[in-house]
Length: 232
Image (cartoon, rainbow, N blue to C red; front, side, top):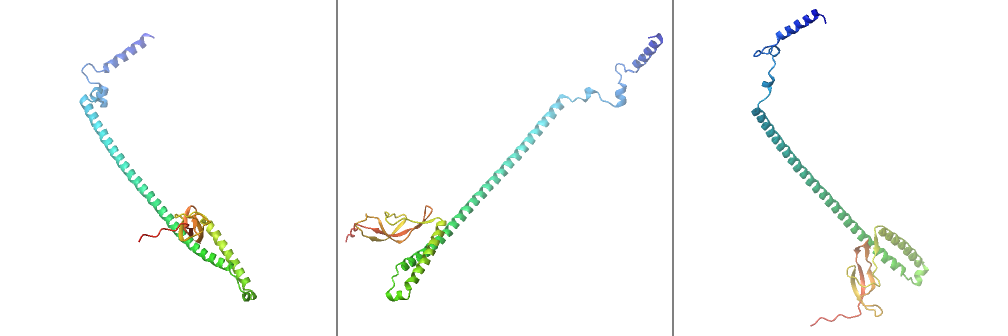
């Protein structure tokens, strides 16, 4: 570097130093730009603690508000759950009530069909037992009664098929020991060849629907021992 260039650089550096503030003078750049002293912009310890305390109280308040909202939501959820439970219980009770009503209605209908079957059975048995005299045979009354018995037998079988599709089946009573749960003793009989308490005859047939008793059987029960007369 030549001497002239060195002197120019030294002059420019000296001019720059002249622009710097001395001790006790304000910094021109800070005054001109309106900047604050970094040490004056930092808060003091009391202000910092006060702001931290206010922030802590605000956090506590918001926490209580959140807790209150959660409690309200929990209470509302419990109410909804209880209402749903009551609704489900009511629906279950309604379905059970409908089921019982259907069963009662079906039972009444089946009992009416059994009464109709009794009439068919009585007419069929009477037609089969029919014995016309010689005058009736000349008029072919026996043929007519036989055809009528055949038709009644067909109707009786169709009715039995209808009852069977509903789970209805006859109760076994004849030759069985008398059961007061499923049988009704219409009268007492006497047969020394049969054991005491056996069913000798059926006055009206009993029926089951599945495992449930639909109609008890009315039977004649064998009694080998005579009951003792009541004391005078």
